[in-house]
Structures are given as C-alpha cells and as structure tokens.
Image 1: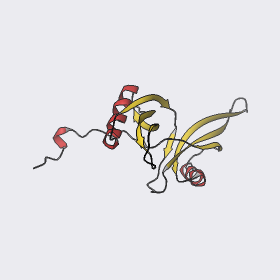
Image 2: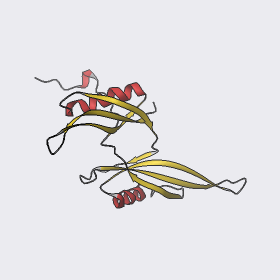
Image 3: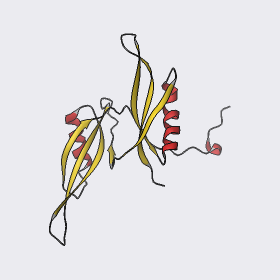
Image 4: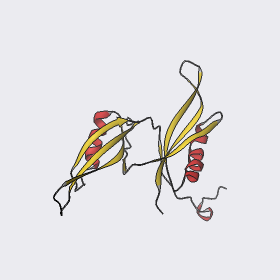
Length: 156
C-alpha cells in the first residue's frame, strides 16, 4: 500500500507567552492513504496535547519526494527544498530538467543545506538546489502499523 503525505491544519485557541488567548492555525504533516485517514490520524496525534477545542481546518496533499529527518534536539524546524535534476535525453541529446521537493529537518538554513547534501550523497543523478525555504510545519507523523490486540501486553 502506498502512503502519501498530507498537510493538515489544526485551528485552536493558544495561550500566548503574555497570557493572551489567540486563535492559531498550525500545519502538521501526516503519512496516510486518504484524506479521511489523514484527518483521523491527525486528530489522534494532536488530541493528547490539546487542552481545549480544536478543529481540522484544512487538509491537502503535500508532494515531497523524500524526508530527511534527524534526532538532533536543536533541529526543530522544517525546510522545503526544491531540487532540480538534469538528465540527458539519449535520443535527442537535449538536457531535460525535472524538479522534486524534499523536506529537511534542521535548526537553521545552513544546517538544512548540509543535511540535504548528506542525504543526497548516494544519488547517482546530478542535482541543483533551486530553493530552500523554512516551512511553518510544526511536526511530522509517520504511519505506524497498529499493534494487534493479541500482541498487546496485558496489564495485571
């Protein structure tokens, strides 16, 4: 089964550092097979962290060819990197350019470019970094297989 990335926006009331309550909308990325599953999964993921009411205000497909993540605690931002690949058409001899978006987790722009280059080391294709931009994405939730009931540890 092929999973896709969906950007889900959550709207809720957030208490700011100055004590004021403000309505905010935050985007999250979810790995799912459909819009319906993406909505269900984002609700399950964020519900434990929400103190008041919240709603899923938008869901859209997010086209990322790859994600480069890191366990680094300081890497708390997500950067959208557009890569342009240059291939040669063997019949005509003409250069052909194709682009892909990659999501990179990093602390800042320099670290994002470094992590992107590290992640692309194994690539056989020549590429150019066309752009790198910080996204407002708060977190990324990967699909996890549900644990069958008979395998769950019985509490005694």
